[in-house]
Image (cartoon, rainbow, N blue to C red):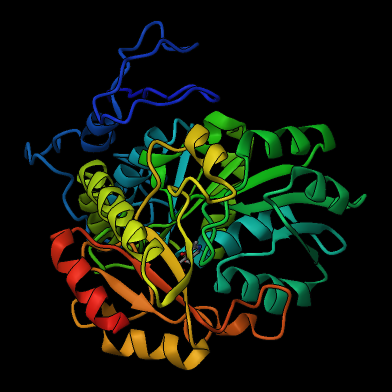
Length: 411
Ligand SMILES: *Cc1c(COP(=O)(O)O)cnc(C)c1O
C-alpha cells in the first residue's frame, strides 16, 4: 500500500493564495515523497482494486466475509460494522488529508461527535463548548450527553483566556468550531492548543466549515478533528456522513473500538460518495471562497444589511487569525437585515437561485434563517442567534447570477 504524506502549511506563516503550494519539508517524511493536497485527495487510500484493476475503490456492498478455516481472514475483513474495504479507503484518505495517523468514518457528523464524546468523557467529567456552536452539537451535549452525568459550560473560544478561565478540575476537552456556525467566529487554534496542552486536556476542532483544504487543525496542535462530511467533503448535497481524524495512535485505537462497539459507521455507498466528493474538494473550495468573498463585498455595501459576518473582511474581528491559519476564507456568509426577524424571513423567501434549505457545503447555493431553522434548538440559551440573521452557503454557480438573485431578494 502506498503511503501518503500531505504537505502542510506551517503554522504562523502566511500560506500562498495559489492552490499550487510550495513543497515544504517537515519532520518524519524523509523516506516518503510529500504530495500536495490536491494529489493526496485524489490518490491516498485509492489504489486501483487488486482483483480487477478498477481505478476507483469499488462499493463493497457486503456485510460478511468468507473465512479460510475458523479465524482465517483473507483480507483482514470479518464483518462490515468493524471494517469494510470501501470505508477503509475513505478512512485512509481522511487521515492523509489532515496529516493524521487515523481517520474514522461515521454515519453522520453527530454520530462522529457522539462516539468522540463517549470515548473522551465519563460521568463527572466536563467539556468546554463554544458560545457559537452548531445547533446539533449543542443539543447532543446539553440534552443527551448531559443526561449521562457529563458537565459542560460555555466559553467565548475566540478568547483563549476565557477558555482557560472556564477550565475545571474535571475538564477533559475543549470543543471549538472555527469558523463557527452561524456567526463565522474565528478561534485561534494554536493559542487554544497551548491552553489545552498546559491543562492536559484534549482540543477538539470541528473543521466542517473550513475543510482540510483550507485549514489543518492537527498541524496547529489540535488533538481531534471533527467533520460533518455531509457538507464540503461530500460537497453535492447527496450524502450524510461524519468523520474523526487524530494523530495519536492510542486515541485512534480507542475511538475505533468505540466506533465498532457503538456501530454508527458509514455504509459502503455513503463512504464511496464522500470519497468521490473529496477528489474535487480543492477546486470547489477555491471557487466557494472566491464567490463568497464577492457576495460579502456586495452585502457590506447594501443599505438593507446592517452587519456582515465573513472572516475574509478586513473588519471581521477574527480576520488576522483567520489569515494566519486558513488558506482562504470559505463559502459561508451570514448577515443581519434591517427590519428584524420578519425582514430576514422575507429575504429567505424571496430568494430563487439560493435554495431555501438547511445544511451547507454543496455546489448549489443555499439560504436559511438560523433562528427558525438550523439553530432553533438554541432558543433561550446562551447560544441563541440574532432573530434578523440570514445564513448563506455560497455555491459554485456563476457569481454574477448569485449577486443578481441576492440583490432582488434584498429588495
Ligand atoms: C452539519 C454539522 C454538524 C453535524 O453533522 P451531521 O452530518 O448533520 O450529523 C456538525 N458540525 C457542523 C459545523 C455542522 O455544520
